[in-house]
Length: 282
Length: 282
Image 1 (cartoon, rainbow over the protein chains, first blue to last red):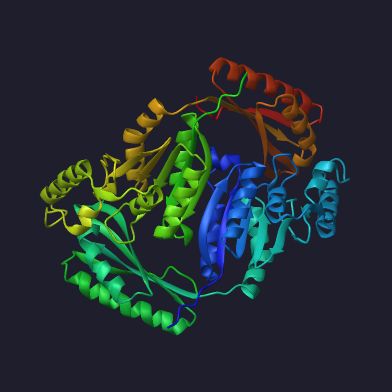
Image 2 (image 1 turned 90 degrees about the vertical axis):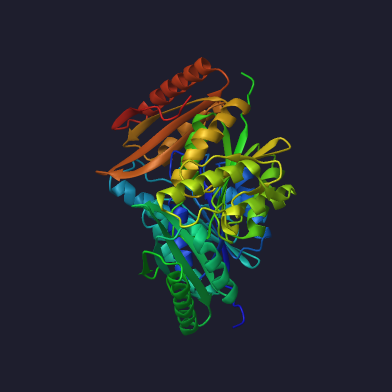
């Protein structure tokens, strides 16, 4: 079948706390899973510091690579070191302006926090107004969990989506605002992943078999993951990844490849071969 | 004090399993902590796929930024899709050649595995020999946990260090082979991080105080992390980061800044301020 190429994506993680090792970034893994199961092609994840030049450089490089969905996390808050949207502005040469939708979201938010007694004044102070400054032309994305709205900017063939770094806020906005946008606009593939767990044959002995099967089925991707040695026996996971436009075709292909792998690996006299459960989404 | 600049570092994570969301990359967080406590400046983390062009592009871009310590993880194994060292070769225009030290390490390793009954033949098959193919001029780094040796290549003012993706192997090689190299060759700063936990004042109200203190003490970095709302009260962590050549000076500076922050935040009438324990290393 002719190769059908899904839309490309990149993630740009912003935050000194990640690069100082204070915080383990789990946002990009969560997003990677969602993008994978939505059928997009995630090319790269880049983590940079809270530094305007670094942020805008990472976004500009991603735009130059022609990436269609660029998702940033972190750096949307009220403090001076939250400068992701300025970075987006710099990279896309759009000024930041007070976004009316974002302003309204913040008004509602602080009115509610005031009523709840969480804040002592309900006005939008300069620090709060800062969170309504979005790149010109961006759409504000409602944050149901925290204060800072997200931002979605169309730039040529690309979308630059900016989400907060707090995981619960990032997930909320992604699920309610970003994923629907992706599902309706992106080119998506069907995917299927299946695998074998082989015990008693080390990866280096499996390698020529995997090469041979890969050469025979060029449209699938076969990858082995050594899982260590248990009771004197190497444990290796072998995963078969296939993707394409047509769901049935993809399923059939994975089945065929897995059968061939199973037969050939059996010839290496392993102690045990086990089928692994499906990992991919549709 | 005149600004003393530590050596710069970047991490390049290689592996489809990371970008498909199958595996949460914890290697870069572990390395970030170690680099931080060794006093280096980690500028960027990039994760790319098992694709020769992508890998070499990421390394080449990092070299162009003048990064002094480039550490890659993943893609050193025996299978065809392990191609990190070919990526290093391509980026540095050094051929890969059979490295005698790496060859000897692999000979010893497979002789031991053979005696243990883990492998059925002790010879170095082509797949095993592949792991001894290092960029010309690289030093092989002994892997005490798994098979694939690491690689350390000096390239101009930069070092390109390649480590396996299996966390236990990556850590072993880093601790025994890479960290000693960094400690003896890199320019390192002393660091100190201290903080406050403020409850009852939202981040947007703290923001102007943090700005004012940041402007007064330009050599420190002050960052707030909202921790959510508990019992109707905002919880915000405020961290003060300082670094410099002289340990005592850095400690004194953090103490002064923390005191000033404490006094000013008190003026905002929080419910509670608490000192946070030191997080940084020396």
